[in-house]
Image (cartoon, rainbow, N blue to C red; front, side, top):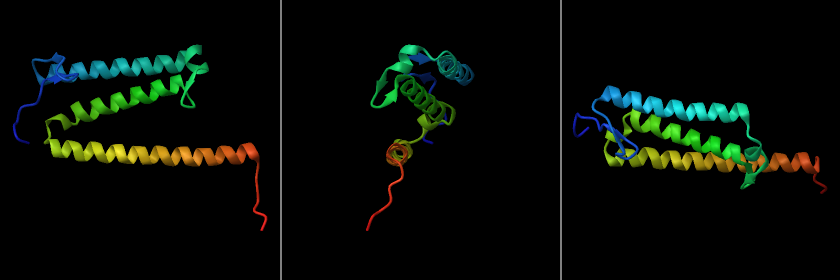
Length: 128
């Protein structure tokens, strides 16, 4: 690391803290709020979020995916001190994860579509 001091702000400098301890509590509080929202949505399952869909996925699932990505970002960025690392290391970690997650999503969608087609159309054997 270039310097030994940690940045004491979150949300791109919107909230600034006086010490590392207060920053940890602030990030923990934010992550707790996001988790409470996820659990509340999972228990209540509002009808408007279950009935409507976007890109073939229910809105509640999109909300869960987005909130999970937000939590993963803040855990890596603040608790794992990724924000204090050199920019090259940050890019190498983030770009690799974006590629791997995109590849995994592609595989899930292709295989899921294949399984859906088999279940919908039934077993088809090749007729040579």
